[in-house]
View (cartoon, helix red, strand yellow):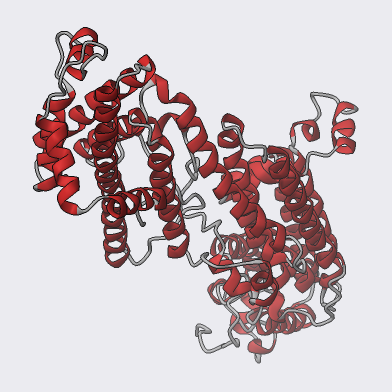
Length: 596
């Protein structure tokens, strides 16, 4: 950041009106010369002794300032720098006092001119050191961030990019103290505008660099319309949700200017600087969100829209505590983003309802639509508070007022009710897709697979479970048990009926044929959830094995003595148990494990 132009212009003006020798001579005069007394005019010494009887006079401070400016400058000796700043404060106070007196004294006027010249040069030196301290800390912070990025490949930026904590980790305590002293000295000397300009430019540059690190620098409305969404998503200022909760973008209590401009007399300056920075940041986000919300709606954009909605929401407290008039614009932008989010979520519902796929998933496995929907909802639930906020419409609130407080549905949030609607659409769609299977047993397996997947996703996510409510979860578990019973009835009911009838020659052949077909077919079916697969096998074994042992025992004597007994009873009870363990693996059947 360059030195303020008015400083440069003032220095150039002094250089044009005075030669270097003459300037040095003026400072020497200011430091050592004592004006001659005049009966009709007060001398500077008389005035200063009257106003500051116990303090240092302009000549003493002027001598020190002149020597300091001609020697090492600032930033090398902290003690000398503090003394320099104190001297500037005393000269500023003296100059202000003399001007307030409005004395008609030629010596006083002459001294005031010379003091102002020294004061101008001193303020320029202070401004240079002020900017240097701010920029040096910013560069140090940038290097530290780069080091963190190189050492942690999984590092991601948060939504908020301008964070200044109470401890000011990028600014050592001594730098904060020096900045505070310089700011006080410059303001006292009448250079408040220059000091504020240097501070504001440095902080805006810091913010710009933070945005550059996430690729946001230079994005405009035209870029938003032109850049592919995948690239734009990576470059958006909303960052990612890598942390559980993003910190606020601003905190006036910990804002850096509170420490630098700490004097009660500088309250208005603090407020003005804070307002300027808040406005600059907010306008940047408003412009970007306004452009993004005009892009074509699609399901993958929901989460970025919600990121931007939350970013604007995080800006609201800071805007309200500033003098900015952007609060209404933020609310309008949030409303538009919220409406876009509701529309996108509604399109998810429509896509589920209108999914007319006519190809059955092989082996009754989990349908891709189920996986996509549940994973989408699981991710959406990370934004449940925000989505609940955007879904809180007046008609829904009226509906809630008409419900009883002891009703389970009354306890479900606005977004929770939307989730239930999506699940109802998914259930209806899966029911339709189950009819693509001609075998009623496979139809039940398909519904079991998908129902179990949904239930496990809900149980595995506290957010979804809380949103859906216990009543819905219990209902889902009951439906799974019904599918299980339906499968057993369709597959094993006839088998059991066959073994209950008399006549080994007939029933033995029928059982063998039925069991061979079940084993051949259902070994290729898939039950992907290991627990449900085990539960199914155990329940089948508990149903079939005792019945088969009874059947086998009744005709054992015929089996042992009769000819061609294998035609009627092919399997030992242990064989049946072994072959049941082959079911639902998704592999071609093998009868090689038959016991002899």
